[in-house]
Length: 84
Image 1 (tube, rainbow, N blue to C red):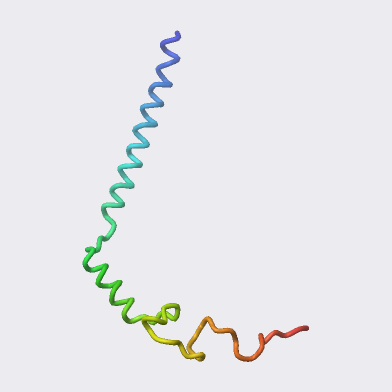
Image 2 (image 1 turned 180 degrees about the vertical axis):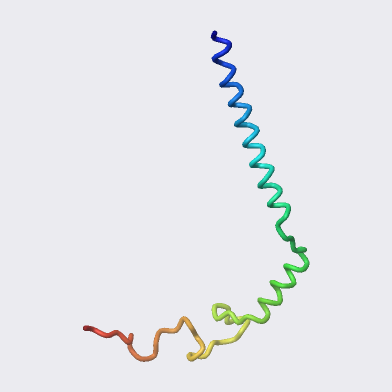
């Protein structure tokens, strides 16, 4: 009787292993189906973005930022707060 009671446990462990392997296989298939981009294309795109997008936090590259253009400058006239 003792041998019979261990069989269902062993069978459920093999079913659990099979389920985990099947799930892992599915994740690998999804990863494989994901669209890929060549490193040369990605780096060229990143370089193009960095050259065309002005970054106010790097004035050594883009020059000083005018007060009207600076999104990080404090507001010119008070805080525009309204107390009710």
